[in-house]
Length: 236
Ligand code: TMP
Ligand code: ASP
Image 1 (tube, rainbow, N blue to C red):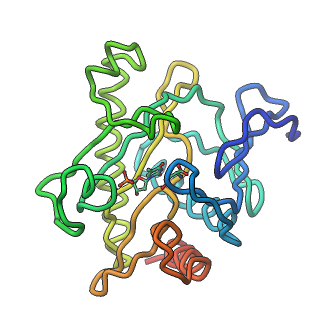
Image 2: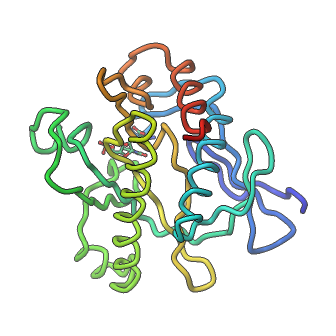
């Protein structure tokens, strides 16, 4: 397998072509951004942490029958994945109120929701990833009703699997973001699952173990990412 030209550079990852048109390499960066890239910085070692955490979680999900784009780990910062046509919607699942939901509805962070909340955000930084619903998605032909059913069901299933995984490690999975894409007629989970895309609160102390340490200047950012990698790789 050969690594060819760069196809795309995002805020936290680069995508490279390979000699197989159906496969691409996803390479993680140490760059960190927040608030639609108005805040920028570097989290040393984040690329390795996010790559390895994502690999572990994709393997976990695959073992439970959730189809993802993951094929194999290539190096500390790279994984081989199936090439997706990304559905331009960020799917957010929330178990506890924090961040955007707290701001949107004026509810204090920390309220445990009676049931998980699923949100769709249209992927567009210039518009601040606006909240949209199923009707926008169908009416604008962003995804079909059948695709959206799959995305929704899978997102809740992923929530159950991850909530259990993290609670065994004494962490509350507060919320997280997923992206899905099309590959050979199938909807697969794509992107990454990492402290950049999830909120984790340590049980008992409420200590924040995710990118909120960078967003909110809480300090011990690199150390916390390293700690999360050890927690995830530690088998229960
Ligand atoms: P929010 O509360 O800011 O909407 O974030 C909800 C979850 O989604 C949180 O775990 C962080 C993650 N997230 C991303 O992965 N990318 C983003 O651009 C944003 C805004 C949030
Ligand atoms: N990564 C996103 C951005 O830079 C936001 C975030 O994760 O808070 O826009």
